[in-house]
Length: 145
Image 1 (tube, rainbow, N blue to C red):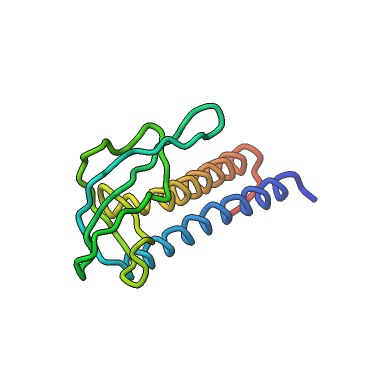
Image 2 (image 1 turned 90 degrees about the horizontal axis):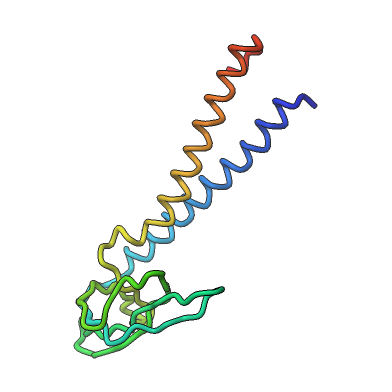
């Protein structure tokens, strides 16, 4: 098999993988947001969670549901450095059927960050492969397109 074809197959697979992961993460975030209610919450404390050779931080947030219940939850995502401080107000997105399934976010668009990263990496790799393919075809007179 031609080395150029192998290169295109491998990078095509990697690009497809990045774009697929980005699409799945976007879909999951969109589906989560569609089924949630919003409330304002207050950060009660920030938990330190050991991760490799350092700690990451996750907020414990109190909020009031639309039916008037006051609940606290620990955000499932930890970060380094800490995104929140004790006393910070934050937007809470929660599942009305299971209010403990909640996320503390500064902006709803934060939930799409991982999807954006994977999609951007996929498109960047696609661009690099297309540029490399065009450059190679110009210098070696091999037509890829």
